[in-house]
Image (spheres, rainbow, N blue to C red):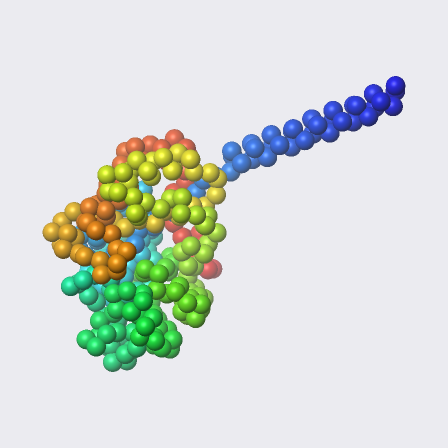
Length: 290
């Protein structure tokens, strides 16, 4: 009987220890921070994009933005970024210009990178067309470095690099070029800094009228960890309404989608959820190579 009581006691103690450990683990999870990077893309693409980015920094929750160096409105974007050195700025490396009737060329003279452009010297609008032209990897490297150099020359406070569309991670060889550039210039790559690998926060394809609601719901359910929300701010202006994506899967009503994302980032409801949940808004400064 005494031995049975001893065994029973040990079982009870072990059970209590297990419960205590489980509770401690749950408490640790509860107390673990929720950190959120809110990354805007495509600054420099249009004047309306630049104005929307400014609004989302000054009145919203955006923490960083990537600039398209070869895009037509880059110089304005660079000036705005210099005037706001507190903004987290990235170089949005681009080898595509995806819009019908609205195109851009490489930073380098296009005769130096002929495999990256069409017969008129413009970037291809789609990844498929780009890959179909058999891009020379040395030319890819030269053009991307020229984009980095121009951004640095403009006095930008660069924190990170990322890529436009899916072209530069379409093949392992292209992605290797990006990784080498990141190492050589000493900047982290957005998405490669321990962010949660999930499309949980993606609202790109969400209908414009539902973007804020969907974002609010997902922020309420966000768990501990480092999260990345990628957005494409814009304004509903004639300039933006004229844009038509040349990609078959491209979104219609680009202006409405981008304006809705900018509005969601400035929403009082969104900011209240972030404040109430103690979500820490961060940029890429902590991940910079020392």
